[in-house]
Every structure is written in C-alpha cells, then in structure tokens.
Image (cartoon, rainbow, N blue to C red; front, side, top):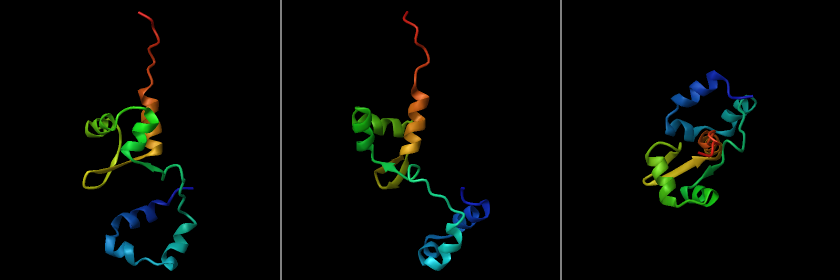
Amino acid sequence: MSASPVIKQLLRRLTWQQFAKLTLAHWKPMMSVLSVNPEEETFLTPQEVSDLLQVSVQTVRRWIKDEDLPAYKVGPRVWRIRRVDLDMWLGQQRSTDFSTD
C-alpha cells in the first residue's frame, strides 16, 4: 500500500522546520498507510554506478548532466541515483536490433 494522497499532500506542504518538529506521536498514525519499499529507497553514488556498469565516473556524470540518467542533487556537486531508477534506465537502454548487417 502506498501513502494516501492526503498524506502525500500534507508532507509536500511541510517546511523543513515543521518537518523537523514532528515527533513519533505524529508519525504513528501515518505509518499504517505509508509504505516504504527498501529497494526504492536505495541510493547509489556515481562511483557505485560506474563500478556496477564498469564505466568511468565521468561517463556516469555525463549521463546525469545530459539528463539521460535520472539523479538527485543532494548537495553542491553531490549526486545520488535511486537503484530502481537505474534499473529502469538500464531496461530502456537495451538494444532491440539484433540484426547482423
């Protein structure tokens, strides 16, 4: 089960200060409707992606810069790639042309 639209809307409207003030008492009622899939929440660094795909870090950074590979900027010059996004992106990169011209 994923988070209800109402809870998603409320979480989007919170400022960082409001979010930081939330206590466990605030979260308990929401936990029953929030679903966190650990695979979706796994983030990789460009270095980890380059190691997995056996390409250079510069290649991974170029894919991010060219907006080919979905990534999140989490700080100045710091990027993270969700594992699920990488898997989907890799699936889209598969060649369907197996002809031997």
